[in-house]
Amino acid sequence: MSTTEVGRRPTSGKPDSTPRDSVSLEAVIESDRRLDELSCARLLGNVAELVHAAQKAGQPLGTVTPASIVISPDGSAKLAPGAASLRYTAPERLRGGAGDRRTDVFALGVLLWEVLAHERLFDGSDDAAVKRAVLERAIPAPSELNANVPA
Image 1: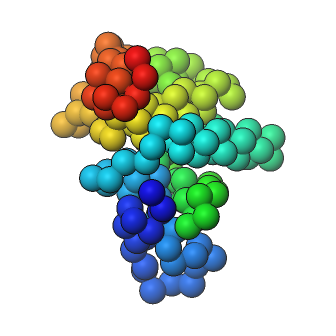
Image 2: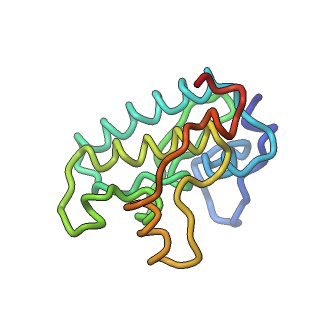
């Protein structure tokens, strides 16, 4: 599936260097159409390389979210400035620790799960509920929600 089939990125009327047909990873996750599993793995591998490069350049930890990842029509990805979200915050940071580079690896794992399962891994009615979900929820295999994902 091409990114243009998922949906178009909304335009704000402001100049933007992002091609018009680009979409956020958030739009991919929320779409009724699914990427095949190999495309999911390739995409997240590309994003992992971008995160690694951004970390080496001094990007703050904990800002990797589906909204901060923009996918071009050719399938390439780029990182856009983003804000932290509890859904993608590593448990050690939620417990008050400083975190390290592995903090973003946790976020990448959550993103991969969500791209494969097409639903949010950690959800809740408020921040406290989301935090509890991250700290306590048993994580089902994505294959339980998507039969195309190998067990």
